[in-house]
Length: 474
Image (tube, rainbow, N blue to C red; front, side, top):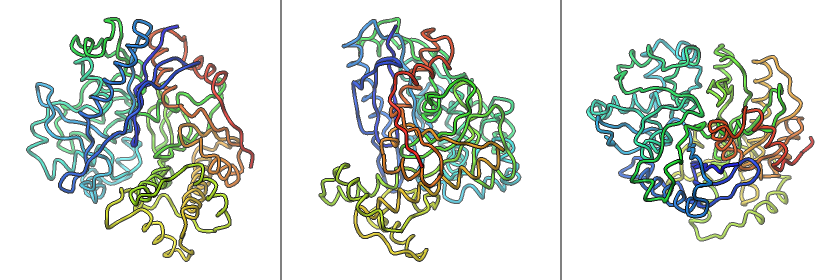
């Protein structure tokens, strides 16, 4: 069986992995750098592309002709605009940049209200959605937007830089709030009413589409054979992760893809765009198999990560093992936060730290604020478990389905404290794993595209047999 390279970029770090669904290794790790420049927040895409090429070079040096394909997945919504020759017309904004503050109300008023936009796109209202990012550029930098001729999401852009071929992969396009999940194409009426140039938005292709071979220059730089192909995997990382949920054929899994964000939902055949779905904060994104990932974005380990980053900036050495022990020792602390509060979305700044926001939230809600590292973790984990339980109740009401188990996949499933508290809070049996769900799902799509497996379900069956899953009872 051939090997495949999964390039998996998360909001905090990136990895280049090589292997298949039974065995794989990480050949390169790196930080997904972002920078604040004159008060604006950007991704360092050129730096990320350089890191990806370092990883590819390591992979091909070790495995050479054994590697048949490369797939890239990243977080959703972010993009780059290119001119007629394929050069960037601006830097790549980070989805946490504050230029979109207030844009939801402005844009939805222009488009006939939230319900109309939700019925057309099925996407929940988040200030970082591509729709609002482009609207902010249209408002603040119209000349820059006017210079653009091509829209490419971050993974589509990286694939373009590797191959010279522009494609828009479907799972990622579906996160923009500019995609029509019913017609399965761009929401052309929304694009037109916003005054965006329709020519920006190119061909949408399914997960598993061959983008093309590496350019000659990249091929020689990384030492790749001419036979290696770049595949439009499930380019949105959550779509890749959900592809790896280890469920049996016919099972409708309830899942949380747990990392910087917690994405909680189910896979269904048709979008749900009811008023209740809108009010409950659920969204309809496209799955790798073309179905709908009906899910809710919940602030995940981001809150924890920002606390730890702050403590480390003070010179503290944070051991995750010690932090877990302190968290359990503080489990009698009753405080918790609501991760849905938008104050927790932004990164630390010198005058607005995550730890201070947590203290403020607790005080505002009549709780004793946390004072130790362990109490901060209790407040975060208990708040997440409560948010999961509420979202599952809402999901059951909207879909009419009843669930008895929950799959937690991705890096966040390694947090056994949160796994157990989630089982207890929800009353469901929790299956935690696989940890590397995103990379496995990315690889699964490539294996399907190259004929190594006949169906996506065959890949899920392999993951269920081969990957470690832990069980937590209420």
